[in-house]
Length: 336
Ligand code: PEP
Ligand code: MN
Image 1: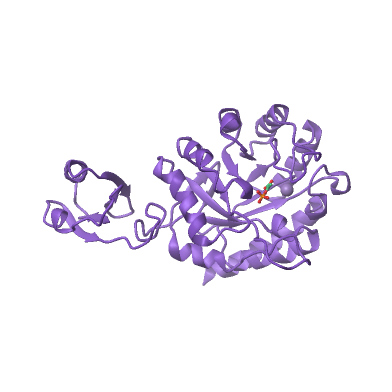
Image 2: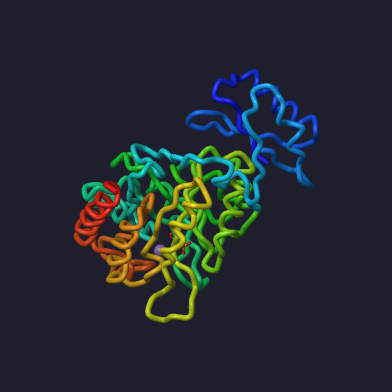
């Protein structure tokens, strides 16, 4: 249930409603909006009787929430959430681009790629220090050393860093360096990791599980928000289907569906969906045309020698062209 406060309800009135909710044994979660504050009621085992709250001073209306997810739903918060990182804003109608290699391989490698993607217009730099690999014999990432290289990238270029956290034990060290902490497709329903992410002060990039339904994905985001972290960006990265012509199938239709259901920003990662660079380019344009809130694209200075995902990584020159065209497509969408 959502209690919508009157526009002129001051802090004192809001607090008195919070107290009234808590007295009944529920949890109250104030949600500031552009014009007015709403207060979500959480942890109710049964339906809540609206009559308890309707007549209270400062209350405009009481809206039942029909969705299983609450805090992440549009029913709870109508305005888009804006997630600000560096000079990028996700969710305000712009389309910031995150770019970089799949894995951090050396300081020289990340610095070289970071400089070229920054020049091309990328707003954040990505690179995995902890790599979730299908095979235990594949390169697992440089781990702590990789984080140090990422810190160097930030220091030299000023680009905010996006990097993946794979488990609760490594969360502290990852969030120290990351400006946006990534939770990958394989961990979308790692509930202890989600709860830990909910306690982080850093924004979270929550990738869609490779076979997750929209509802399951939003429920995963709810785990994070329920612990107090409201800065979440969702990322569509392709789902498993029966086809073999691409690594995964980019579910473009999920972008408008998420925007309808949730106030959280949603970005698209065409690289992990496609698996091959030609498709990455076309899918990037399609995602820009959808009004995606951002993009994440893998770029490598020497893809043939890359330690992971070389086949889907764009060459820096290619990326420069792609970002230009994506921005031009997005500008047309913005005008509408
Ligand atoms: C990645 O972005 O580095 C990654 C491993 O992606 P995903 O979790 O989508 O496979
Ligand atoms: Mn990758």
